Length: 256
Length: 150
Image (cartoon, rainbow over all chains, first blue to last red; front, side, top):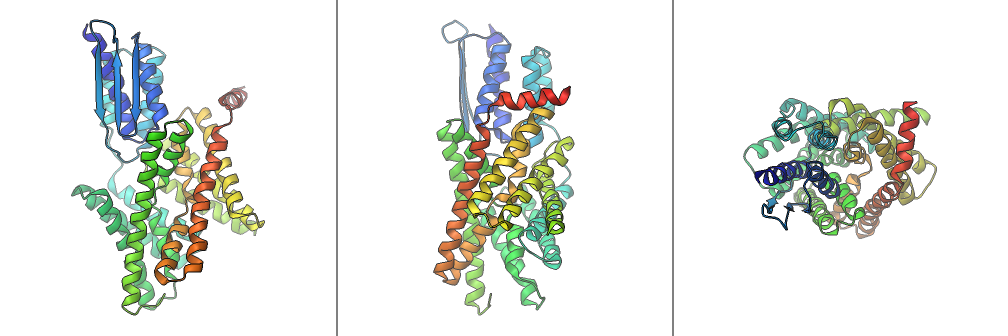
């Protein structure tokens, strides 16, 4: 009798973890369904939103149970999505008992993140690279790289102190724009726009936007809207941050 | 010109790779994530150099990089998301967002409307590209994977 609940919990937990790490709605729904089918549950149903999961099993029977999860929008972790996908495949291929699946899920959820310096370094390289791609010269690229490094340090600090997402975005974009004005004001022969463009790339909502498109494509309109709104608001906050800084700079007599 | 494009391919690859690591892509897929981004950018840039319309080049680039992601996904048995989310970044209109705001603040309303429209067009083009590529039947890609194994 407890088995139904056990299976449902496992399936929902796996779905929860996938959703939290940025899996798209269709895949999460599909995975939860398949896991329940693989463990021979009948009469089950799942409804997934970009920030919640609703699932029930064996509704007509005595051991009926249902589960609701609230899953806040999180940051993307492609490795976890990939591993959870593999786990679901194993379960469907009947290679995995329930306790084994739990163990595997636990390992995935508590998988260590990369060391922080790698994230800092990658943000720097990404910023510098994109700056050059959008027409910066080598010097500007290097400056963008430096600002990118500092940006990630700031973001890590915010993460540690749990600063709200939008405050975080706003301050980060102000920070980046202000820093990019510095070398030009000091008289270095660089143009500031290419540097900012490179440095806001780690902030732009490419992921939310892409996920939103895919949700719409799979007819998950509500989730698509949630992600789209997320992307638009992110873009808006970046714009406000950048705009505010430029406005202040120009009112102080700076010329761009 | 070919040299510049090759150079930009390399830079786009490295920048995308860095972002893939940032999103914790699996180690074994780092190169392929980078490759997806590099290819997307090169297609976009070469078409732009040929004088194609901004929207059209973005559509084709997004289309090709999404198909590439799907092919990698089938071959390497990872979700499409891994490659697509990293690879799309070079096309995301970060520059468009910046210039739109910049011209708005500077009071240059002509350029503001041009850049604003370009940003929205780019975003729309990415949508069209991805949707077209997702529309390809999975069977075709599976067939490709089988052929690869033989």
